[in-house]
Every structure is written in structure tokens, then in C-alpha cells.
Amino acid sequence: MGKRGWILLLAGLALLAIACDAEAGARPGASARPTGGITAMAALGDSISNGFASCLAPSPCPRNSWATGDGTKVNSHYKRLLKDDPGLKGGNHNFAAANARADALAGQAVEAVRVSPRYVTILIGADDACRGRLADMTPTEEFRRGVDAALAVLKERAPDARVLVASIPDINRLWEIGHTSKLAVQAWNFGLCPALLAEPTSNAPDVVARRSAFAARVDAYNEQLAAACRAYGPRCRTDGGAVHRVRFTLDMVVAQDFFHPNAAGQTALASAAWAGSPTW
Image (cartoon, rainbow, N blue to C red):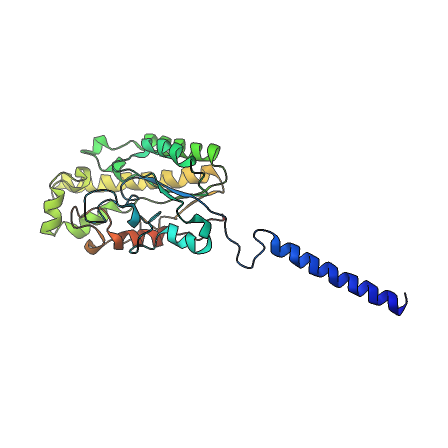
């Protein structure tokens, strides 16, 4: 090949490289920091996830939710995701409800799939445990069926969604830190979570045994949550028990009931449950 031919060949290769670079720059996700394309997320669960009482009034306060909160006090999963996915703005949907047990999850999931979520958080189980008596607590097998039913809805109707299943907080920890507080005991005496918190100052053998049985049931629920997530497949991830390991203090729960997380408690939950951008 002559000198002129080499010049033409090199010029052609340079133009081809420029064209390829331009095409790559135009492709979605070709930037150095690709976004996950999340335009909607959903939270399922109970009053913990809807931020109950964290705005002082005894009512839901979704802006302080560890999952979907958009307020200034909690670095929620929504706010963390929004940094990389500006298209998520306004797409934080909270379907968690006070007093919800596992058998309510499927109904919440049906509502959630209507917004086409790409990220779904689940935190459930406190209300299955917090019943009037140990005998009233949701049987472990029934609890698992409720979780499986919800996951089946998500898998069928939102197959691209990434699902985070959080462990149940260590509710017995509340008794440990609060049973010597007159204010906490006074609040619990109104009938909050009697399966655990009834007779909070008693050390009678049957009461101690009841607290141990309560803790064991929560552990069993957490095992089933992890097993259900594994059965769901690779698009589901658990927190590895991190939420259950959060060491709550009295200044992390609301003063109205000494049970529900306040903004500080919600922030702790958000950090413990965070598994990074949901690309698993």
C-alpha cells in the first residue's frame, strides 16, 4: 500500500472511532456513573415503615419513613437512591399500614405493583408478635404464607423489581432499655404489645418465660423472612439481620409510646437496612 493509501486508511479509522464514541455517549447508561433507572419505589409493612408517631402526633408520618421518607430528618433509602436517580423524584410510595400483619402484605403488594416499582422494601412481623397473649401470636407457618403470597404478587406483576426484605427489630430490646423507666412503663400499661410488655417490672418466672418465648417467635419469623427471600430468587436480598441487631436506646423511640422509632430510630433503621443501590 502506498503512502496515500495509508493516510486514507488512518483517517478512516479515526472517523470510525469518533463515530463509535459518539454512539456510546448517546446510549442510556453509557456514562461513567450510570443510574439504575428507578422511577418508583414502594414500601410494604407495618407502622414502623410508615413512620408512625415520628411527627409527634399518633398517626402515620411517611416523610420520616426509613424507606420512603422525603423529609429533612431521615436519610431514607429514597433520598439515597435519588442522588443517583433523579428520575425517582416523587416516586416514593408508602403502602405500609398500622397494625398490619403478614397476611396484609399481599394486598399491599397488589397496590404497589400499580406504580411499577423497581425497588420494594418489606418490613413486617412486629404486629404478628405483638398480640394480647402468646397464644394469639401469628403461627410461624401462617406468617410465612403471608410473606410468600406478597412475594408471589411482586414476582408475577413486577418481575424487574429488586426486593429488600428487612429483619424485624429486636423488640425485646425495648423492654430491656425501658422497664426501669417510669414513663415507658406508664405508656406500655395502656396495652401496647402485651405479649411482651405486660407486667414490664415483674421478674416472676412465668413472665420471664413469656418474654423469652416472644423473642424466640421473632427469631423464627426472621428465619422465615430470610428463607422466603432466598426462595424468591436473585432479585431479593435481606439485610442479613442488620435491622434486628440495631441497639435501640430510649432517645431513638417516640415519647408517646416508647415503642415506635422516632426520626433518630428511623435513620438507624435506614442505615442498617441499606444494601447499596439495588442492582442485585
